[in-house]
Image 1 (cartoon, rainbow, N blue to C red):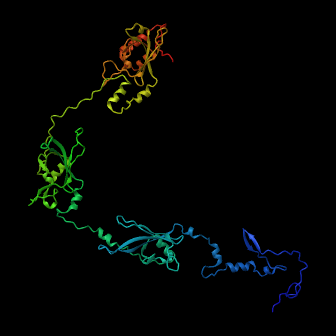
Image 2 (cartoon, rainbow, N blue to C red; image 1 turned 90 degrees about the vertical axis):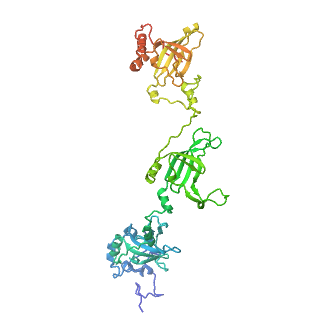
Amino acid sequence: MSWNWNSHGLPFLPGYTFRDVTKSAFHRPQTLNYKNGYALPRRPTVGIGQDPLLSEQLIQQQINELSYETPDITYGSFEESLLQDFIPAHVAFDKKVLRFYAYFEEDILYSPKEVYRVRPVVIYYYLEDDSMCIIEPMVENSGIPQGKRIKRQRLPKNERGDHYLWKDLNLGMDLEVYGVKYHITSCDAFTKEFMESEGMLLNDPEPMPEDPYSKHRKIPQPYFITPSEFDHMHQFLTMDRKVLRFYALWDDADSLYGETKPVTIQYYLVDDTVEIREVHEPNSGRDPFPVLMRRQRLPKKVKPQPFPSCVLEISKDEVDEFYSPKDFQVGQTMKLLGRRFLLCDCDGFTKEYFQKNHPDLEMKPIEVPKKADMPEERKKAIPPYNGFGSLEDSLQNCLSLIPEPPKKNILKMLENDHKVLRYSARLESQNPEDESRRFILSYFLSDDMISIFEKSTRNSGIIGGKFLEKTRIPKPGCTVENPEFYSPADFAIGATVEVFSHRFVLTDADHYVLKYLESNSSQIPSETLDSLRQKLVVGTANNQPGDEAAEPSS
C-alpha cells in the first residue's frame, strides 16, 4: 500500500489532514480558460497547495504526444504531414472531369425489323465531389428522345448505401445504374493519364458496336432501272409542282345568252388531273367565281354500258382511258365534259415540256379574236372650278372619293422662306369710285401664292384691309387640267393681273423685287427687268420708289 504524504509528513488520510495556515485565497479555482471565444481546459503545472483535480491532469507535452501521435506505417510521420499544405478537394479537383464512353442495349418488342437497339452514352465523373452524370448524344432523325439520361448526382453502388468512386471504373466493365447496364468501351486522354497516375491499370479499349437498325437504314433500297407505269411515288417525286397551262376560249354560244369566254386549263403532271378556271374581267357583271371545273381526272373513253345507269359519277372501272398531255394541242378544239374549248396558247414551261417529251406535236399559238362591240375607254371629264378653296384642293375631290392634300415642294419652301415680292397696284374698273383705291400685291416665293391688301384712304367710304387671302392665281384662258399660274416673270410695271374677274394694274414695286429678279435674270424676261429698272432706278429723289409699296402694319 502506497501512502500519499503531505507537507507535514503525515499520510493523506481522514483525520491526518490539517488546514494550511499560510493559505490566504479561499476561492474555488477555475478549470477553463476562454480563447478566441472557445472554452479550453487550463493546464498549469502541478504544485503545492493546488486543487487535486488539476494535479491529476497530464502536462501539455504528454497530451500533445497522445493527441497528435499517428502511426508512421500508413500515413508517415507527423513531422512530414505538418510540412505539407492542406488543399481542399473542391480546389484540388476543380473542373477535373473523367469521361468514359459506353453504351447500353434496349430491347425492341413487337417489331419485325429490329430486336434490340444500341444506344451510345457518355459518362462524366466529377472528381471534386464524386458525382456522375450520363448523357446520350443527339442523333439526327432518330425519333428517340435523347439528351441527359441521369442528372449529376452520386450514383448508388449497392443496397448498403455505398456510392461509385473513380476506383470502381475501368474499361470493359459493366456499370449498373438504376437497373440499366452501361458497358464502358473507352475513355479520353485525360482520364487515362489520371488513372495511370493513381496506379490503376486500365483495360484495353473496345470498339463501339454499331446499331443494326441504323446500319440497315444506310443500305440503299433496291430500285428498278426500267421505269414502271404503276410507280406513283416516282411520279410524285419528279412531277410535283409541275403544271401545264393552256389559254383557251370556251365556246358557249349554244346556250341562252351564250358568248365566248376566256379560260385557263391547268394540267397537273403529278396526278394527271385537270382544272379549268375562268378569267375574271373587271366590270364584266359576273360573280368572281373563277373555278369552272374542279380539279379531277377527265375520262376520254368510257366502256359501253349494257343498261342505263342511274349514277351520274363515273368510277375508274368504267373508264378505259383518261386524258393525257398529248391530247392537249394548241390550235385545236377539244371537248371536255360536253363543252368545247379552243386552245389558243400556252406558257413557256408547257412549250419546253412538249419540245422535250412530245417533239412531234406542233405548238403554234393562234390569235384571239377581239370583240368588235367593245366600247372605247372614255376619258374622265373634270368639272369646271367652282371657286371654293384652291384649284389643287378642288381637283383632289375629282380624283378620289377621300381627297388627299396636294403635295408641296418642301425644298423650295425651306430655301425661299420669308421671301416676299411686293408690288403697288390699282384697280381697273368702270366705277369712278374705284379710281382712288390703292392695293399692295404680295407674291410669296416659298409656295407661289399671292395675297392682296387694300390701303385705307380717308373719306373714301371704303374700309381697307385684306382683299384676298393667300392663294395661287391661274392665268386667264388656262384649263383646269393644265393650269398655268402667275409667276414673277409676269409682273412688269404697267402689266395687268386678272384675279378672279378683277383686273389690277401694277404701278410700282419694292427695291427687293429688282434685286431678286436681277439675281435670277436667266429666268426673267428682259421687258420685265427694263420696266422695273426704269421705275426704280431712274425715279427722282422726291418720289422714292418703293415707299408706296410698303405694307402697313396692322
